[in-house]
Length: 135
Image (cartoon, rainbow, N blue to C red; front, side, top):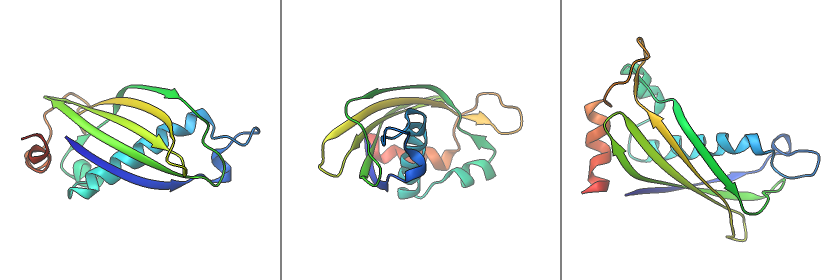
């Protein structure tokens, strides 16, 4: 299992009239967490695209437990438990600055050939870098 945490500060532009994070912004928090997780093991989206592979989101679901507020520093914890063939599954836990769990989510992404947009296997280097976390 691969686990990585990233800290973010909630910007004013991410909140709504009630002073809480607009629900549509949570997908961006997941993406930042995924990108930083991959970067932590020597991979990134730019490298994937240069190697002809893109990773679109197929499914996304989340549960709001407490609001995230303007100027709060949140921790985005990303857990990558499984990968099978052309799909990769991520779980997310978001914590506020008091270390309270405020949001949980999951996404399912696919590996696609950048040119054809057809499913493909991830590059071998991707597999080699992620495999040690599952042995």
